[in-house]
Image 1 (cartoon, rainbow, N blue to C red):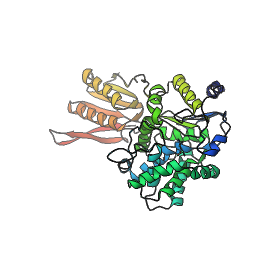
Image 2 (spheres, protein in one colour):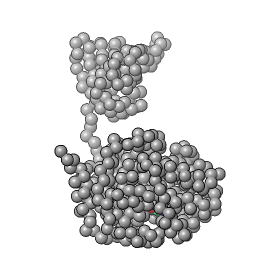
Image 3 (cartoon, rainbow, N blue to C red):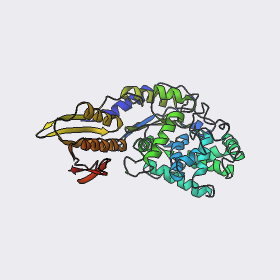
Length: 420
Ligand code: GLN
């Protein structure tokens, strides 16, 4: 069977081809000269299958879509708290190139607008690092997210840097408040170069999928940034990625996203997919008109909204198994799944004193699930039950005797058997 997914995606592209509304960005002169009707769409699953349709081989400059990835690099280098001290995470409700700072702290509102992105660029490698080495780090990081070496479009870089008066104004404002300490012109050059990196929708879909996959590249398998950094970046994309249209985007489309002025948009749905679109005509917020239409349709057709309520997973079946009472846990054991399990232990207690907890059909135990399971087992043992855990994948522990906590009366550890 030929997969229907590419046909579906091609249909999404074709449906918006008759829409010629919007305008090319013209403040970067070469962007006003591109073919306005090209349109491409790519979707990458978190296990590395990429579907790319339309004008998918076209390269274009990444522009503001570089911001979340360089932000991720800064977070990885300095830690989340240190970076938060320099750039906030509040939506500004303003355009991407607004000259504004948070009153009081004088921090840029968030890393998705230019004031924040210039500050983040200057954080890479610390204030002493020379321009070339800093840029080499940025380019290498973008390449790790894409899974291939990327290059700069020198013509677009030159054109933008000679007309980057507004970004210079923002950088001097940052320098004035000591938010950056480097030469503002050097920071603008580095940031504009970062925006001029060439990508395809396929690259962008994989970059987004890396964030959606907890920082692990779906194809190369490299842990590009930690799970905590990926989660933080996705949160900031959800609230700030679409600038002054972020609220409308999150409520109607519901996918953490970032757009760029050359016509790209990425969306990353945690645990599911990375999506990227390209079409150069922009709306008044600076987002690709056809890109917004395509994302709207994908979200609707594929139930991709972040706030879509998932069907409750059945987390356990219980029953008698010889002289033991057997609990078979299923799926991903998080807080909600474990809460159901604990409630069952409490309200519908095991019929036999010997209990087998079978984890064969569990594919993941979250840290909170593990803590809750340990405590539940400890209480069952203290209630006089004999507990054995059957755990062939070693999710709770490797085979052997493990300690699940202490007996406060006898002041000794509570131990149980884990088998594979
Ligand atoms: N390089 C562009 C700028 O700084 C990026 C803006 C964007 O893509 N929204 O103006």
